[in-house]
Length: 337
Ligand SMILES: [Zn+2]
Image 1 (cartoon, rainbow, N blue to C red):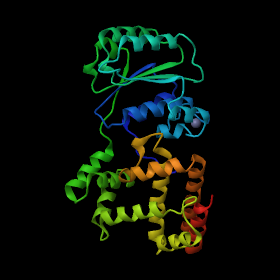
Image 2 (cartoon, rainbow, N blue to C red):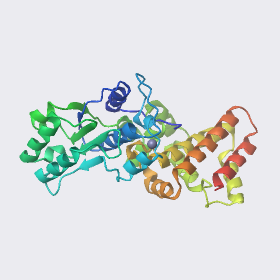
Image 3 (cartoon, rainbow, N blue to C red):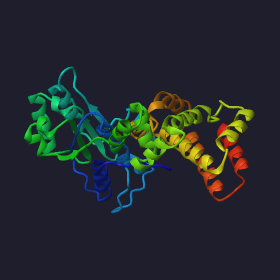
Image 4 (cartoon, protein in one colour):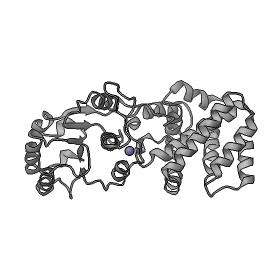
């Protein structure tokens, strides 16, 4: 991956646990809605089971997304929610019921079918009724080998202390991007999606985001430019040669503009890779519908190849290659199948 959104303290803790091979068998993720608890639980399942994962012991990666490829059989099954060993339990009606936990306990009697590490995610764990809680407690006391539990709740106080005491609690806070976005909205006339996008594209760097919002072009025009780029990216089967060449001309008016446009394109392609794996990592939140459509249309290998093409163009332009030619080659390669 060429770009990483800043990871939260909770995610950093998980990365450290994986690197040190001391991931507890029961975790409790707490925090308000929208803090990415479910996404991180999913990323954890991917990280623990990716067939292409290269874990270096003792060396903690900066983000869980560094630990899975998104392409192997395990990653694909987990993302499609068809992996037999990665289970999500959620309330059946108003509560998580005893029958659901009993059924879960039955499957836990046998070894994982495919996974290196089985992961059971209990969503809205505060909505387990007493019977279900007691049944779960038994499993948490004697967890089956190779099985990890992640419980999700708003606050530890919403669960029985006996459950909480068997879990390692990780608190999730609002993402820095939301904090930066609020500051931007106070100072500039940006809509919330615009402010969140600007924050994400600037790596949650408030100073940089303000600079863009302040510049003579203004944040709205900058965001429009990015929208234009995403729409006109000469994607597979979408563009023709003339379109690709005019795309290259428009994005490369001068060297500085070209490099900034390439950075925006890279963010967009990164979003295409992340939208199904870790939606909270998507930067262009205001373009989410288009991102979903494009991600469904292009396969992961194609997107990775496009990222490489854009990266190579950036290196060449930084290395003072003839800019127009470099951008034309890039646009034609992006267009090709
Ligand atoms: Zn994988």
